[in-house]
Image (cartoon, rainbow, N blue to C red; front, side, top):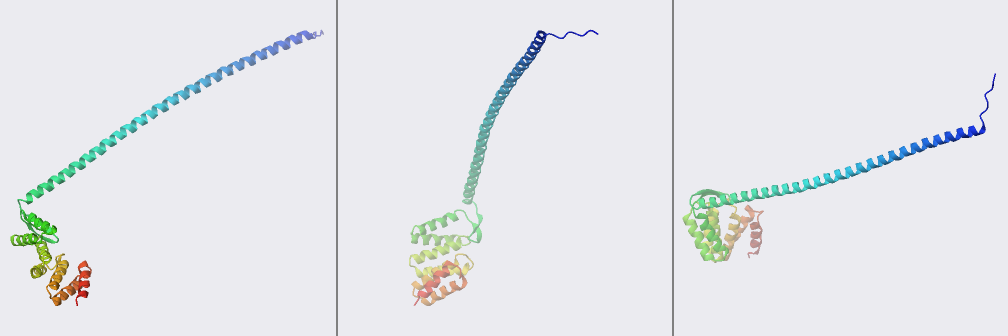
Length: 244
């Protein structure tokens, strides 16, 4: 049997070089492919970032636009609400003015400090004019105004107040006997009126100023007994204690 000849050393070296060259070529090919793949990925990432940045900018612009539109709508709503309030206030003023004008020509029912009655045209004006004179310190004119009012409107719901201020006008003008008569009339006719404690206090002072201490002490004691929780009762207690 013939033996195959052993490869020579030069052949082995040639074969080894070919193998290394092939491996190097394969390695270079793989590195190039990896390099190209990295470039593509990097480009894709950059493109994605750019796209996201553009999208975010568009969204931000849309948000700002919506904010501006919302602010504009809010301003319009507030303006409409104000217009509604102005219209409501204008209508209220109109109807109040209309009611006042009608009140100057037609009788109307009113409740004044718990007293209900019919108010005639110009009645309130007559009362207000007399009250303004009292507030201005024109006591004679005030007394005349309240007395004229009481004679002209004997069933008015303002009558208790007219009698009350008339009595105070007489007292302030030092017409003590007139004040006593006026206030006693008021107390008798309107015993449950809220002005009675104050009217009784003025009555007691008028009695005291006129020299009738006994009547004054009786009036002050009655105020303390009937209206203990009022300011008039506190004043009456001090006045009563001061009477010698």
